[in-house]
Image (cartoon, rainbow, N blue to C red; front, top):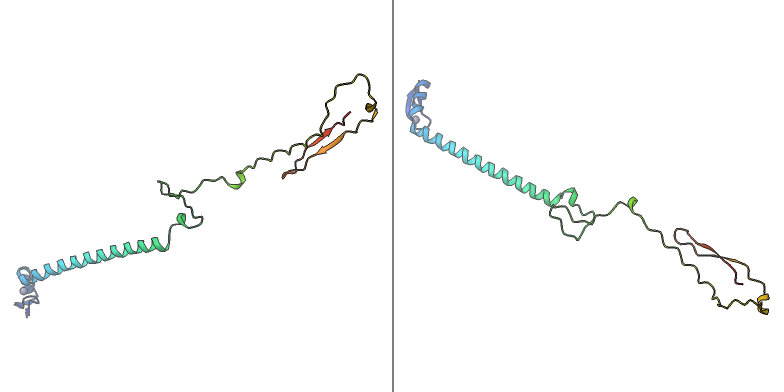
Length: 155
Ligand SMILES: [Zn+2]
């Protein structure tokens, strides 16, 4: 049964003869070589296309889906640190914050005292009864702390 080489068209006898012909057929060798190189080329093109797609995918993800750490939750004008982390100001949690108490309000100024020389001889004006002691209370501050002082009456 005569068959023809599909590459060069040479007639050979039988499939066995065709196989023998293939081993020496230049056309088949050329075609095979070409198809192999073509396959390699196509493969390279596909690889390049896949790489390009992957790069584009990464780029679009970086634009549309930023990492969680860079969400504009609290935009900070400070420049990022060398480590890449945003240069936010470090603050203690609210439970660690300690507000110092306000200083107590100063006592009201005492009434002006008239320094007088002690008079061994009771003067007539000393017969006046001494004023009773008075309690002085300052206004409470924001913590409700106030000061109570006993102000002795003048004699
Ligand atoms: Zn041939």
